[in-house]
Image (cartoon, rainbow, N blue to C red; front, side, top):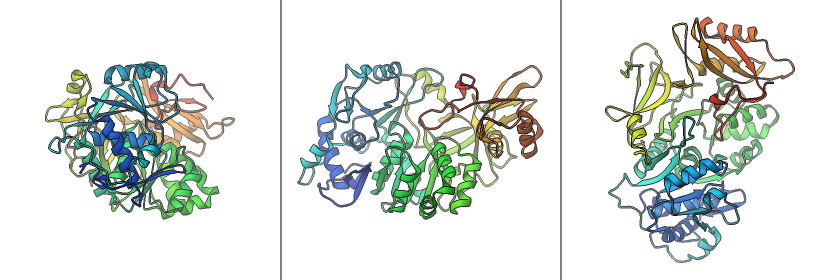
Length: 495
């Protein structure tokens, strides 16, 4: 029996119960076992394989097959540029690339042996009970399962080596927090080269024995259709929930579908408070948030039986130790006054290191095995964690205050004239840093005045948190997961 996927242990093709659905194509648990088992047998003995991670049945089968064969998989983002792909291939040195039949691969992968994942052929090939594909030794939870490359905002992407132990620990902790069972049906439209869509959104349902319906391309109509047809959970990123909030007034079927869902989960970036409130007001359901990283998988979450609190990512998951530290690396008291500190975590959810980068691995950890996340947060008296931003881009030191960009962004988004907002700091000879707002106005022809926005922030937060400079943009630069790329601000066209 594969410890990661006990529900795929030697069933036969034809077993009932849908495991995966992408558009109008689906596999039952038995068919998934057959297809992944056939491919796992072919992969046995490989050192490492790359997966061209399109949103397809083939990608899901490829990753499950690699895990069942005990071969580390490297998911590749189909939108990556040639130089980034070339770096990842050179760094991870896969022996072959698994791909959906008929999909063209870029020149950066030309030297890799290609194997097309033909789901239909593999399913038809197994009508009898499937022999077990040999997984890694059960006693070796540290065996590498996936190598997921970081976004590389401060240099070439680094490959985070995720062991089987981390995947199992995170998915089981989320099952506890979210009361996640085999009866749940998850719907999402997340990419499969990232932790959110691949590990949580695909491997999560399979570990529980449930099912996932992938929309391919996100649409509010697709969300309404699937939740209205029996899906119980929705995973999304803030961009998706913003579109949902915008659509709710004109889509009564979407309102009904969201109101009937068991769990609405947002991740990968902070969900603006304004969107939280609009969804709750229209549907009576609150979105819960969780917090994690590629290197740590999931660290905290609002529990299914807890209080969904706008702006908070909940409490540490079972097995995860979390602390806040000051600039000197000293822990802030858990029961002390609210103070901004860097999040450090340790637990079975952590990666084992960066591939081929012992220097970066050593620098990422503080003494005692604490991983330095680089994320800044405050902790409420009851233990709820609230992220205020990244240490490198979102902590602004102005006039002797430490200010988190996130709370100012939420305040700006509460203004009727603001559609999107980001906040950064820039050098100031008097204040040290001054607060700069980057705003996409609701009406590009009549944007709110800078003074009006500054007064709005000062009245809802505090005077020292008002933006001193306001730039107006047509759109904020975002990555594939909807995160705002703050280092690119200033390079965009002005509104």
